[in-house]
Length: 604
Image (cartoon, rainbow, N blue to C red):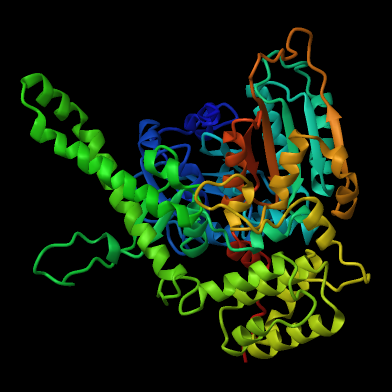
């Protein structure tokens, strides 16, 4: 199923209307840089131009760039540090100039009294003619993928007890139901999931519009807390898309890659004039080849690229056999598609080479794994996940600390060991903490504290380690994984089946009653809610028709988990198709980074 989620794309004209008063006369938009990525997926620059947006600037300290415009619209997240920059922009305006500019501020996704108070303290609140909010709830990243791109949702929920992002998630789900019909069944696991379900039920009760009369597309909504499965984001993803994200980081479907492999090779020039700008590529299913290989285990990608190369080469050879005018015309008509396919193949062959350089133990300057041993790191991760030596200090981790490998890598390994052992013994935990603080600096004590609060790094409180029971009951570790032609979701981590996706799989068949004991071991309540549908809207399933489940990850989801859910959708006897929604697309590195805090030394 490729849901036409583009329906949810905004008509940007709405963002430029404030309480019915039009400010569209050639405005300039000043963007909070973080928002340009998500907005770029729903409103291209050309669309903004159509709506008479005259100029666009990135929010920076100092004076605003010169522009002959009457209206300036600040499009920002509700962050105090951004309010200080806006105040500086407004105060540095030359008030002598004519005509005077009108300022407007649009908070995404919500207005904030704290931010408005900060603007008031800075003496600029009165300069804003309009102060509004734009609820950018769920952004379509692909036909089956939606994200709120709320970068601090996990930290807010689990460290700060701030439920704002959960409210936004509930609102986003209500919008989705308004477009695609009421979802009859809601299942959930975890405290945040319970909160979101409660908010949805309350919003439905308070909504004056009454019953939704749209035939429902979704049969089931599954709400999953990220802390139900802390293990999956910590492990290294081994799908093609997952590895691109692990090594280079995918931002709003775009990736920046080192340029050397993409330079056209001209004979006799050697390595002269290599490009220095990173190569920026968009990655989504609109590209045929990427849609085919993105969710495969990286070890299976090479053979697909090789087959494609032969097919494309054979297609180009056809031109020699085109004799008649009709045949030549047909070949010419296919040429643009063939050239696009050849360009796509060249790009993905280069990306695969870059990844192979890293995964084959070679040091590489752009990688997070620069000069570290990818294979050794992976071996230790897989030992932890299969339950080997999780209760003692790990030699590899100790060596990495002694060689001062990147701190995030160390934190991922230590947290992974803690999660796979249901916490670490006091002696082991103290040893790791001491080694980390003495090597990387005592300012990281706050980061360690955050990881403990989030449950990623914790003391083993009882003598019983639940992880082996969960691993066996849920079949989380598979020794005989087939990476080339997989028959189980465990191929996405070459052995480990993500717990979150296993929960979704078992919910569809045979149901959660079969794993009642394991559900009790995992954090937070599990529940089921039913939403009444008006008569005539109940689904009568046709023979062989699949059920559609929306899985919403509260706190983030990885590309490997997305690949595993897509694999389940494609299984012939699966009977269920999945659409994925999340607060944020994450990998282990940016997830841990969002929980890190660094104490700045006081100035002397």
